[in-house]
Image 1 (cartoon, rainbow, N blue to C red):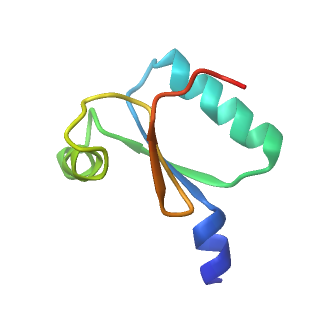
Image 2: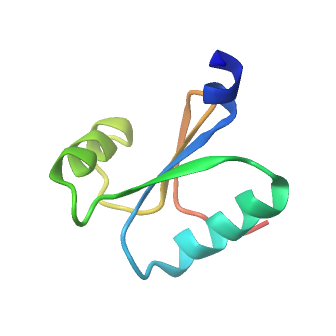
Length: 75
C-alpha cells in the first residue's frame, strides 16, 4: 500500500489551467494515478503548495515519489 502512495502523483492546480490539463492527460496515458488539489478553492492546499515549491504561486505543482516540480511543458 505504501508503494502505491509513492507512485501516486499529487497535482496542485487551478481550474482552467491548460498546463494542468496536459499534465493530467499525460499521467492518464502513462497509467500514473493522481490526486488533484484545487489551490484556488482550498486555502490549506494553497499553503501546502507554497511550502512544497518554495513559495511559488505557479501551477501545476507536482509531487511524485517525493520529488516536487513546478510547471508542465509536455513530453
